[in-house]
Length: 95
Image (cartoon, rainbow, N blue to C red; front, side, top):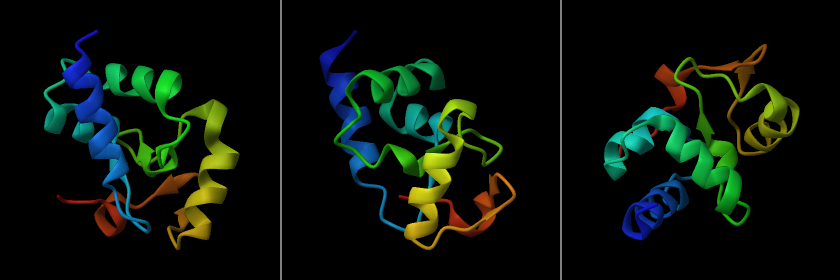
């Protein structure tokens, strides 16, 4: 993997402010990644020190295996979900 791309993804995720969310696709587009899955891979392998919980799927839902922890962390920052879906219209980060 391109080290510069890896670092751009990390920097973008780190810059999402508390109380806001982004999508894997948004981060991929901003970083110049070929696919949103690459963002997920980077976060899965090297995102433990980042606010990974602020990155959602395009429909505003967390990844199924992270849903409870992710929504708990977002709720602590004031991001409320309707069931398991966050309103991207209300909470989406626009850099």
